[in-house]
Length: 161
Image (cartoon, rainbow, N blue to C red; front, side):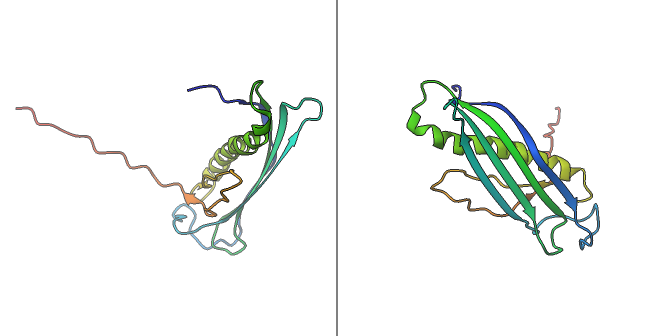
């Protein structure tokens, strides 16, 4: 394993809106999100520093929810990260590195935040899907999968003879 040529300097949430929809058809703790899929929209922008070409800013906006009553949450998150491309990395590959890896790092942080906050709500937590930020591969999944309870494997028992 080697160090990534992209270093994150810091990130912060610009916007963090979570709402439990009024009038959602479902019982609170007993409502499973199985089969209920929100629409997920992700927009990203990157900006290169004019003073220092190795420094970049990535902005990501994530919206999740449905206009209908079939999904209990409405989510709108904006996150900004500041990155530095390490010396020696090929200049012609820097933008793609930032666009793909920078957005992926911020998306993972936003995913965890969304899961944590919705996990404190009256329904199951929302775990937004993994996405590819490669420009050649548009996201193929536009739905979120509910967090399922983990089943622990049964302990093996042996009889003493």
